[in-house]
Length: 515
Image 1 (spheres, rainbow, N blue to C red):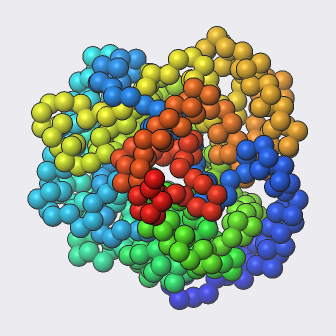
Image 2 (image 1 turned 45 degrees about the vertical axis):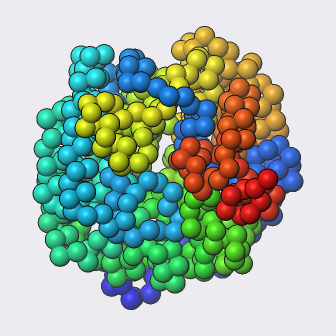
């Protein structure tokens, strides 16, 4: 492993020669110049940086209604993907839009861990009432927040309880998110040992950038030195399945430091990346930062260049894309991601903890998104579910297309067998338009994104939302005065019906435009 201050290797990666910075920029320029942005914009596929958001749930939260635990769990599958949310962090990263508390008191964290254990037990009972195998995990994911914020005894306690309530098999993927800055804690090695002892076999940590100025601007709470220290600690424990998060489009980021981030981390031995464009939500500090000083951020063209630079450099190093925005060198990126996009109907997603969301038996649902509400619900013996909706067959087909195009593609014949709906006929106008734009290929009953389509995957997914969903969301928007304060808008992780106006995201309360 290279030392933190050693410069990136000049174009070498194993036995492969990487494109130089100039070559990567030239390639990206060629790709961007070839894009007919006006046509994509007219088709509703291209979204400006402020408008962009990924399709993470469908239908969006604004469409959902109050729901009870019976409706959520009544048709759960015999195997599931499990997500557990740990809502604590040491600092407020400017771009983060997920629910968290900053530097919570030890006693409050203990209360939350105790409630999460009770939540696990209760969901196990509810699932067992519908499926004889109960919680039976294909994958388990600890996200946040910062799961490594927990101390070693809390981590051990959580795993011990989990394994009393959840079945696994040898190939169950168990993922745990880390934050590099926590290596400054005196007990961090104990935390790593507790995570490893719990059975974790996939380690994910957010780096976002290796440029010190960018990291400071993001209030990340770590620098390059902490990244290398974390890599060293994991290497000492013979931990190899590492996955790094990166973001492009960040303030003070440019083509040069973006290229350097990619090549430096590859030289450090990273073989799996999650690489996303920056997403804005009105409740995030980075959005207000952008609205005040857009010149600090890469413009729309440079965002596209960064995407193509990453594709070019990673491909030259032997990485394969799949699902979209996920890259792995010579191996499957992660079972958890593939399940989410390709097999969630067969292996549902069960959300545990505050602000988690899931998809069970055709029902999209959210848990309550505030710790006090979560603790009160668990303390009263109630399921902490907040909102949900059981999708009819056509909406499930729409969801399957939105998610399927991100990974293994869409098989219209399979959709018709499962739901009794001819999706090829239902979506003929959309598919024809996308094919004419060079965004998808259709081979018999199969539809897949082209490389160009992967660049605009979320705009493409948006086209498959139903009129019922989009019109209902528009009605819900009329009731929202302040997106930054409204709980439904704040935790709606969807581009469908975002409160975006030309020139920026309008907040009728905060921006003084309230009528």
